[in-house]
Length: 216
Length: 253
Image (cartoon, rainbow over all chains, first blue to last red):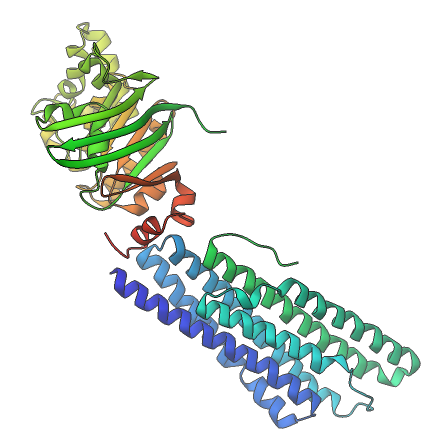
């Protein structure tokens, strides 16, 4: 029974890792579509919404089944609870990707102005954090998530910087308000995705060590 | 604050002839709490349990060193009355073992042995013990019927009532639910929870979920050693020893 359980738990963990990667790709592709005004790519991202929802339900159900059938304890239980939280975070990140992709079409008729400079950089920072937390979940090596606190500070600083930059544009030219507001929302979604990466890192740390940490 | 210990062992060792079955056990059992002992078969948990009321004395080849203190008194001290000790430290076994007598006589047996002859007093003890063992409502109308006619779960609660009748301080339970169905098991577990108001319970179980459900403290034993002892939540959520982790997650045992 124990071998069967551990085989199933390993499979669940592997598929959860793939789900987080899928959500990460949705976010990455949506930012690319936004930067390059690629409507076809944006539509592709939006169409992935159903798949991430289906993955959420399927993986959550399997997690509940493992709890009900095997009553896991200690590290096994921590893997299960961490997996559940990873699934929720991945779904949120995927939906932020979908939300950003949806904005691409709204922006096409808006007067053009320079994209907020820090958005590609901010997206890059957040995506790297997600990559690192995926790796930590997969390998149980916590090295890559050690500096998440300072990296999250960087992401927060970028969000505030974009917010201020957009306000300036909008005050100078009210015609940019729609585009400026959407850009603020994109930055906000990226900042929230960074927060989800931090939450995932906290959970992975607990899964591996049994000790709680708070990434502020 | 750590609760007051009722039993403590100091460097307790036990040998069955040449076999070193318990190795340097240091353990404190908290008063009015449930302590569970878990571990694979043959690890010494039942042997340790049987040390607490000197049941191992009945085995010829057993040799013991170290101390076991009950209420700060060494239970191996010269002059210790074993009958009194076993009155203070009662025991419930794996398989229900009622006497082939009536329900009433099963419970009244202990108090009679300890000198209570008055019928009214015995009636009171029997009723109260059966109530405390959550059995009274099920047997009040057949108190004089044979105990062997009760179901397995009822027989086990009768054995608990029989233990309670002599007013022990500590109740030792050696796999008390392993011969019972899930409903009877649930009744015993509920009973264990209520017993801690007045008694201290030490339970040996192979069922780790049961240990997690019923106990406040858990000790994990392996090859005669107490590998880890701590609050049950800590042992089952975040054990400090790899052996404990591997055992409770089913990787061996």
